[in-house]
Image 1: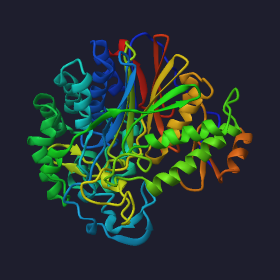
Image 2: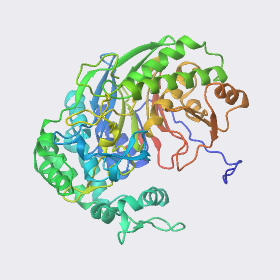
Image 3: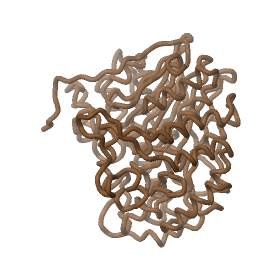
Image 4: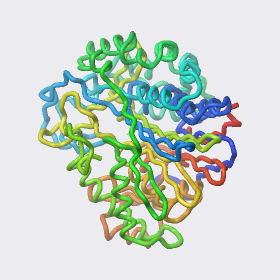
Length: 527
């Protein structure tokens, strides 16, 4: 039984334009990127600006102290590229410091055995080497047209002002208040009196803002001294010292050694078109695998039906089983065995260049630890590793994390789209759903984002939007048991996607319809 209204409906309208478009999980971050496009910036310039801005405006989802991946389309090359800026475990990490508790499975995003005191999930011992700043640095050095400082300073200005705490922000903070209270610096930023979630009140016009003064200083330093200061300069020294003082193993040497990786995107043909996915330890290889299974399993009809949804569920089930069993950083070259609480944004510029960027702290509020010297909310990337030894993804020092991120770019019949999502293990199903809607059934971007979705992200169960027809539910039930659920504002039963699409020189974008902050902004509104 649900307490929710059955007569309420929610929609987001897609605006078409010949100018560029930014689709982000935060409206102001999208406006920041749109302003860059209006000033003549490339899609990559806008992506850098959005990356830093959204880390201020949605700090519990991502930020400079996180990691992720992006897929880029370069119109002049007619080629897709992948940049992996995933996190790594520190070189001094000792797996013996993460003993299994024997208390069953972890209660967070993964089905790993529980670790004593959740040391792999929360606190300084959960912090991995961050990669987001290096990823943005590499993209900008390769394709950026505007100055680095001009792209980072808007985020510094937003931090100096402080993130506005509205009802949605208070709701997110409330969901993790007990854990935030365990770190004095996180409590000082997000809680009142170290206990109560910051709130402007449920009926008042919001006017409360977070104190992000230290973060503003860090962002100004990144803007003026450059990205390498985050890894080799004053920021690196302060961040490593803060983490070690709180019991973590992140070091200046770990930061100095970190590099993002640029490579050609994974590419697969599908339904007469092409899909480009992220390389490395992402869900890109799983997306490619799922598409191959779906193309072989059914021929699309005029609209999504029981056959298409059930074959999608079968493909996800098979791919996730292999992913959790085989994938991980084994120290070998990428091959057949290699492939939340996150944010995703997509950008298209007026020339047709595209970026699909997913970045994350991993869990909501990451490690729930703030570096006091820098104001950075730190990741908990160590949770990506299986704490049980002897597996490809087992916890070990100086090892790449197996991420759930799945940014992708698809093209068919003169249309090209860039999509991705946030939501941990639910990301791949969301991207696969949308890719199918757009390429199997030639749906509009607006139609695809409003179409009911399913989730089968591991395990013998399927989540299905309760608005799906009974014929679809019956077909899904033949694959795995089905639980019907609503798309709501919080918590999210499904992942939160964001995407842009270009056809005949016309650009458009859309975000998850239930996200109260997410929006697609054309460059004319950012001018």
